[in-house]
Length: 321
Image: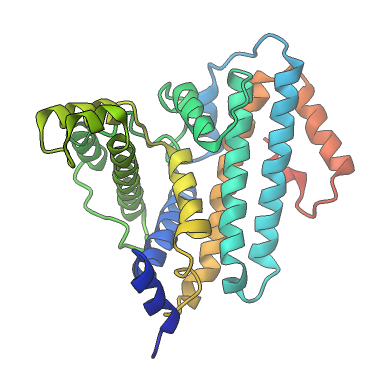
């Protein structure tokens, strides 16, 4: 079968093969959903993570930011739920579903940051960095949302990935049907995102004044390697960075891969449900934390108000804890 558009894109840019790109997209979400539906993730596990979290001194401005962001997370979950149950041809909404998944994740994480430090970041990347220091590095996330790396230096990343794997050889080529396959796929996506972020940092270093002063074109010299590794050591990967990469791939970089070429009809329906399952779990985690931080009784007032006034079809019970 002739694929005129794909050929044209290959000639114009570095275009991933649709089959390979969609495989990783579907399989990562399948792995996350498999873990969330297992004993590895539960209300009890979330509670164990946050049982020592204390209520903070009254901060109405920050608490308002928490509630605003949780409302937006809830709205995007409602969108995703409708895309999952009300649409017969899932290919039509697959890109929109990924965007809803991402923004529900992003707004939930933003609510957590507001509940933690009261801060509001101006960019998605800045939010991911604060979320890393406030939660990922402090052990305040349940599995699988706690998978992270606090460096991008290859010689440091490699042993950390091997330690996480602990002999698990599964990767993103597997459509997970059990917990071990799912864990391997999630570690594979973490490692892949680290490699992606590493290339981003290297390209940024090459444009710096310090690198240009070296008069080199690559990182083969010791001086260039030191400059590169210093920048890489400040890098990090967490679930929010992975989500940002995931959304960018679907919404910007690889325009063709989701709805073109080979049919994956048997996996597209379950894929959107997997997006919904993971979204709901992330919101549940955020709700547990935020409820512990905002002013006493205000979380119940927030939920009760939504029950009375929301026009969304999704029950508020979906975000109750």
